[in-house]
Image 1 (tube, rainbow, N blue to C red):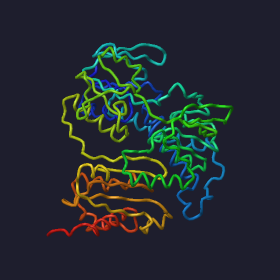
Image 2: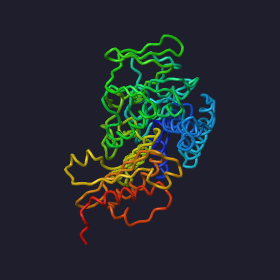
Image 3: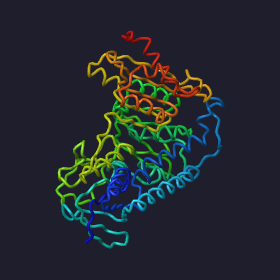
Image 4: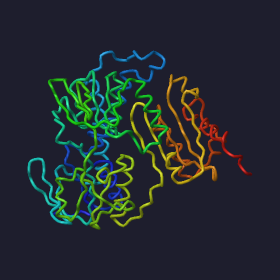
Length: 466
């Protein structure tokens, strides 16, 4: 039986970062991946595919140029599903090659197969041909990610009624699509299909969406979705889903309302991919969604030598945070120095338009009783916004009245996930309003919005005491 210092189950963002970090410490590392190739959900069905799909749609439709040339403008007139997949496969192959090269350079051993615990220090791996291998380790990291939640009442067929993994292999583009679930995944796909000029209905049982985002941003984003013709059905529980024939799907909502479309995407939640791990053998339990509970600082489970990181431990379920969780977990597991992550990290929602946020929302600032002031800039107020033909886009910053420090930065619009890093740096370095007012930004850029928003707040702030 081969023995390793660390065995990592799963090769997504958390798993790969942990494995490479452990290897850089000179430890022996085995990564077990049950998929066809390394990369996990992030590379094959999640982060990279959905963002590649988004970029392909925006390019082929000419979405970014419609501010100048009108809503009927398209780069390619007849876009088909194969057009979307062509770029996707090129991108995925590149990502996998980079990852395989990283593992090879750092002498990380990889094995394809399904892992399951035999006891607290041993696993068996069932290979693709059914052969069984046994391994032991001093430390384990569970980074198996998640899979789509598939309730019994949804008649999934892999063609017209799909989950968020299957949507990437859609056979033909629909004229109308119903998206069930207004979480991050549902919102992203709803807005992407809207950019393809599909008629989109977004169904959500709650009365709101994206509750962890600043409400002013959500209001602006919601207005943009409605302005594009997306039908929002909030406070609407799904009673039944029916398929009457090819491309004839119907969602029956509570109260009798019906929504008809060619395709239904069910994107209401995900579950930890822990079923096959035989966690009983190592004395671990999961919650009702298959997720593991860990110490938020060390990512240690209730079994001291077993750690977990990434989507399998729940919120925030971001590739960026999963990577950091994997790195910290590897350091903690191997007794190496692990620097604490910063208090605030950015969220990115790759909808059309993008949303990105870091720090406290206005609601959180109010709840903490902190006296504050806000500054807002519209992208159309910047020269770069005019050059790009932007009609929408908003940047909002929140400042403490007492210390003048930046408390939160929230952006909706083109390039939001890139722009937010300026706010992130100032926030984590405890910067103040004066940084934005007194510094020079490249002209013309969208980053100018930071100065505009800062001046907007400065106009209402009490004078700075010198």
